[in-house]
Image (cartoon, rainbow, N blue to C red; front, side):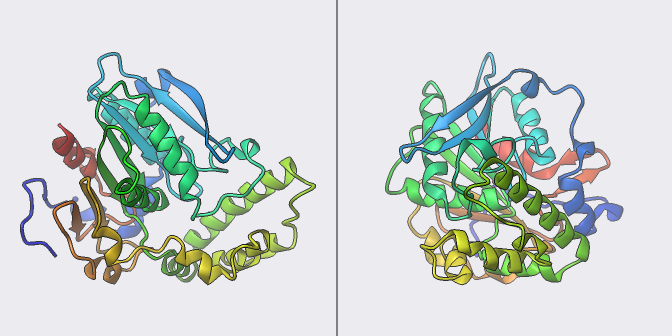
Length: 325
């Protein structure tokens, strides 16, 4: 780890009764985080982004009347532009004077009808193009990308690709609890507390049912919907990705290692907790920081949490705000 820490490396110290990693992880997606009056949502408009390959991604743009810049938010797996952590983060930065775009990955949110093809975690190109398009609409203001969980993995890969294909005005990338090895993360979901497996399986199966109803000629998930684990369903759904040899090859397509971060040309900061129930700490301990790549590793925080109730606040909001301001 790099010993030359910046002044922004502060420690997250939640109140004693809020240090449990499962409380943190569950609260991250709780609607209790979302205020009833949200100016960002009230001032948002839908944008459907068309990519060069013909795919379409749904997003919601909230332009601030006196904007300091554009912040693009990428949700996690089976989350959406309406996830609590996305709405809370967007609300916070909109009130600080930033325009906000909440971008949905394929088949997330109310976007299943936009593409006949299925979502998978290696679909980087269309997401990269969408971020590039949104950046071009920023009116030359600085652009920042914040990704959560799987969205954080996408954000890291976008930063890596930016080295070869620069995105206009992109100034900084932030990843909140990003999985580096999706195979290990899937195992952690399946082998951890049962309610995590139940939660993700329920949301994934609901998404597949919606896709099958929209494209019944192409998809028949009835047998695989009986899967008892996320890994089993992942293995079964490879039937629809004949270009991939196996589910292990699929996971390798978006697995990130130390050499992944050695060719960056924009600042990237990762926020990760030692008690994350889904992401092995060893994956991050093996990484080497550099001038562009910094890790804020905290003792507490769970998965995408970093919340406290006394008073109510989100720790990484404040750190990111200090950096970009």
